[in-house]
Image (cartoon, rainbow, N blue to C red; front, top):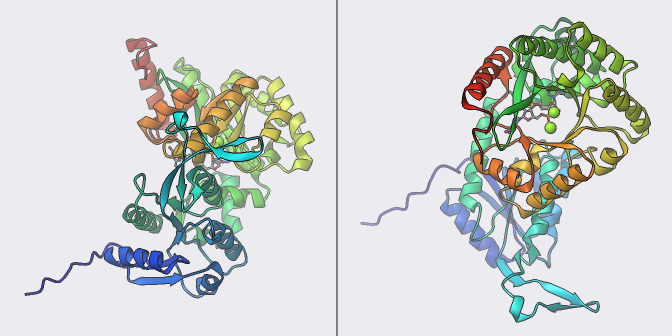
Length: 454
Ligand code: C2E
Ligand code: MG
Ligand code: MG
């Protein structure tokens, strides 16, 4: 009797393209993928032959071989981005980079010529490569591609994800996405709905995420985030709402809502003898509104709250031409006693240039670096660099997007003292946050201040 091999069904719905110039490598990839149950599979030996096909079928993933002699794999993310921008693609396929992994001794440069390190130090300086390309370069390139919205995984032998793990993560992401509201649905949202929500406040609320001292685990602050429950579409994420608010020029209206909610929270906490600063997000456009600082100071004064309990986080892209205006506004806000923070440092326009030109109390490390800190040496180096810059510029530092315990410990070792993220506490509804703070205060009082340390 012949036993028939059982082919798994887990990945049978995926449409996969392999991009490999070398026929032997392409066959190897194809047999691995078929063995995992992938049936919709095609191979292309160059970007140019693959491009037309991308316009015809919906591809879930492109598994592509990295080779120094052929730059196609490295060029793939920028090709995908331009196809998306011209409308040929409606969504990005994931990109998995794979290739032969090697360990080479690092070259040193002597008198302008490259040579190998002496044997005595070999073993200390090694470069890990995939298909001849240093993994550290691949990691930086992958980070840029991810910032552009493309999922890129590096499948290196003997570490991290393998092909099966990466496909499984892709299938998980796809099923999670289905549960979420489709972003495209919101393109159809009537602008009237946004205007009505902002003017009446109906359906809008704010949630609060505590920020912690990473050593003592005491709450040292919090951040407010908007939430919108649309009567027909349900929860609308800020990534959809905020650009709409921006397009409609309603930033200040949104800010006045977060300001009112947050003042309410601060007053309730003060009544319970808890005083921690709460950060509110504000676009450059909001911050540059005439008399913004005076108005904010008046509101806080009416509530009998000290200005240092409110922190303003600059979130949006800042057009260079507005830097002078923004600089004046930030200075006015700080002179009223409010703290000012630069959100998402290291991404978009939250650059070193802006940080050194403008006046801030704090910088926040973007969650995209924090989430990679365990896997990639480049993220660790980057965060160490940011820690040094913060010290040099005398700025407080907050790491956001901390999702597990190991990351808390690692960030602390790298010099970050304050952080927020799901591993510490998720954003909470206002009442829940209030109860959480009361509880936190009680346990702090009963346990003493230096109770928990890493
Ligand atoms: P942000 O200010 O950088 O906020 C951080 C985002 O990370 C929040 O998403 C927060 O809920 C989420 N987050 C917190 N911890 C974790 C974690 O451990 N893992 C992950 N993956 N995410 C985490 P949210 O609430 O969706 O807000 C997204 C962005 O929308 C904010 O980024 C901010 O730029 C903007 N935003 C939110 N609320 C407001 C608002 O009231 N006004 C303005 N102007 N912008 C807002
Ligand atoms: Mg923020
Ligand atoms: Mg942020």
